[in-house]
Length: 230
Image (cartoon, rainbow, N blue to C red; front, side, top):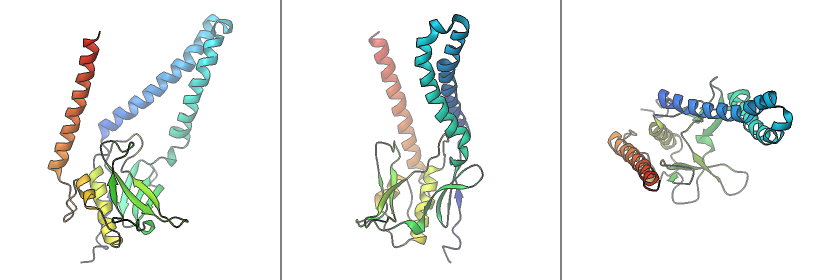
């Protein structure tokens, strides 16, 4: 059987409710902040006069517009440049917008050897959070290849099949770029069975439970400290 021929594409799945909460919180904070920094001083000028509200207005207006203008530019005017789905197919990873246009690509053909023991590895960084980031190397005009961290993440979206996306991408590397070596810890980092490319749901569940318990413990500790010292 030709593995390349039967390689199926995979599209990211969005967790609807957490994504709704995340977007609502962000837009709510932006609206509240802009209203507090722009509309409230403007209303104060209307009611009390520019003489009284001049200094507050000079402080609030630049901050408010400094938040509002970039937000409108990024989330409304240039929303077509923001990815809303991830597709993994026989070419690589495609980060696509709502019109199914690829705004970013990581192609198997662009991957190169790292010059180290392993070409594909995973690392925890300050920006990776709990889930390690997948490190690959891509072509560069210079002699040394460029290191690139692969994230199965989307702005303002919560992806529920992140590990499955990593597994499919790694499977694609094994099929289309068998010359590249994948570090063993990569499979452990994303709970992937290297024989079947399936996710070990039990290990994933234990990790999620540990994260939830740790979060509740930290919140409980903070509340205890607040009540203890007040």
